[in-house]
Length: 212
Image 1 (tube, rainbow, N blue to C red):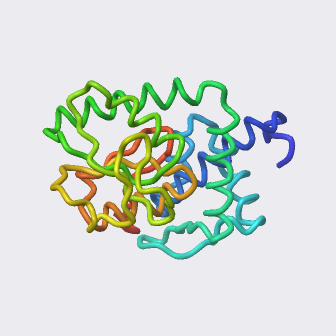
Image 2: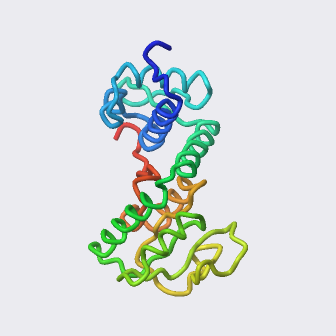
């Protein structure tokens, strides 16, 4: 197995992150589909999946139609978060990439008829999103973050829950960096997937029911 694994540590970590992100979104999908999504050979996905299971990042269960289902363990979620933060923090192009993606995200929001949004999570991404919205058609009403200590961030009101946003809003934009998945899932649960937007760089998709 070692002979087919990437020798570059950065490439290897990116593949692990892609695999964990894919399994988190849909643990019942086939390895062939994962390989197609990641743009790598099927054998490479199989090798990395075995290694992830051995390291305790993934566990195996049963799915309908005699298929296997793969679940991220708590260690797997932690590793995915660690790798996400590592790549975003270490990348010199983070600001440019995030700025481009939040710019596109706000264009999409406008096309969907969303004008008033709240940001979910105070972080560097939150700051970039606010900058992208300046002088644009999208109004940011508040930042929701239960762990934030300040009442305002770059001029935007910060509250601990959606219930404390004192104006009606059209959508939620994910801007959390270290807990993006849980923030995304909570927002989807509260408001529906169609009203929750996240940049591609966070690798977030609504979870699919097993066997779907």
